[in-house]
Length: 84
Image (tube, rainbow, N blue to C red; front, top):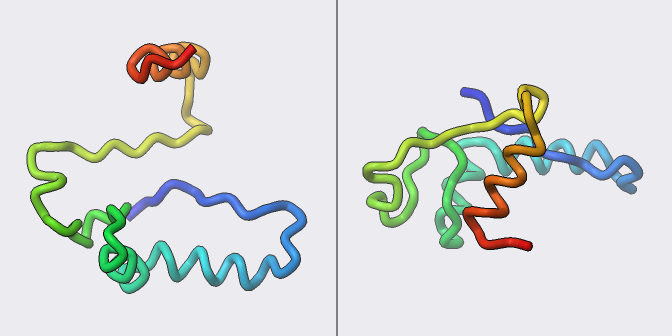
């Protein structure tokens, strides 16, 4: 399973602890815990609560390094959400 990369601050005071936290939050166990806090999981092997939240929807994961035309994507996003 591929998950979008998560960013860690360049000058984090405890970068290794931050990496461990990110690993946990993205793990199946961590995602199940987040569902308990009424958050929608990013993992496909963890169902949201209620499960119908994703019924009929396809998850799309975009990787920034694969963007071919970022300005068009930003313009479309702003148009959809009535920004600017």
